[in-house]
Length: 145
Image (cartoon, rainbow, N blue to C red; front, side, top):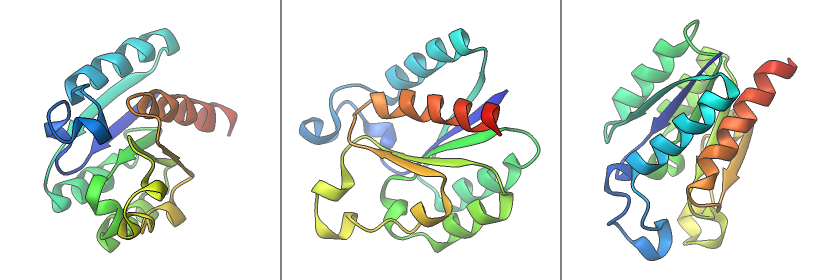
């Protein structure tokens, strides 16, 4: 089983960017945590980050037939990207939307996710643990179907 973790804009700044919201854990720390848990679950992980919306779309499109599920932290693109929504729909893979912060408890423009309607579910507000919950959801979705 293989799970693709995709991370959108500004997540490369985790650990230093607004630590009061996103915490002090870096994206590399999160990746290490996910990989460690994946070993226990016998899951192969592909972990990527980009600030480029088009690259996220390309990675989603390229995932069909190569992974069993996608865990996606689209960051700001969650609220703006019809292109990501269309790519998710096109690949017909289970996609789990994740967020470090509770987007529904933040600024009003963050309350609306353009991708949640085409994702299998949304995990938000658990900090770095959102990634581990996303991994477990991906494993459970693909082993139970």
